Length: 103
Image 1 (tube, rainbow, N blue to C red):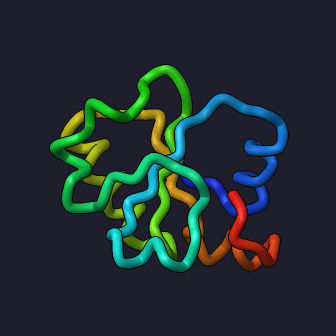
Image 2: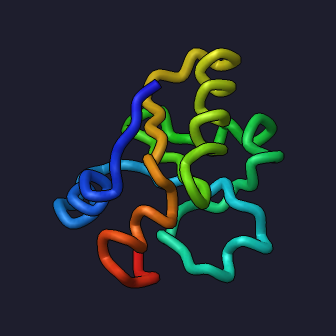
C-alpha cells in the first residue's frame, strides 16, 4: 500500500499536482475541519467506488490514518486499484504541520 505524509500532501496541494482527495470520516467527525476532499464515509466507499478517479493519484484520509489504510487495502484487493495513497496520520497530521483547519 502506498502512503503519503502530511508534508508531501501539502506539497502536492501547493504545487497544483493533479490528484483526488477522499475524506472517509463520518459526518459527525467533520466538525473538526476539512481538507476539502470529496466526502464518502467509510461505510459507503465500496458502493461508491465509481466516484474514485482512475486517471490520477487518489489520496484517502480519515482522522488519524488507520481507517484510510484499511479502506485502501479493501479497495486494492476487491477492485485491483493501484493509484490509492493513504494520508499518514490523517487529518490530524495536517493540523500538526500547518496549525490550521484550512485545506
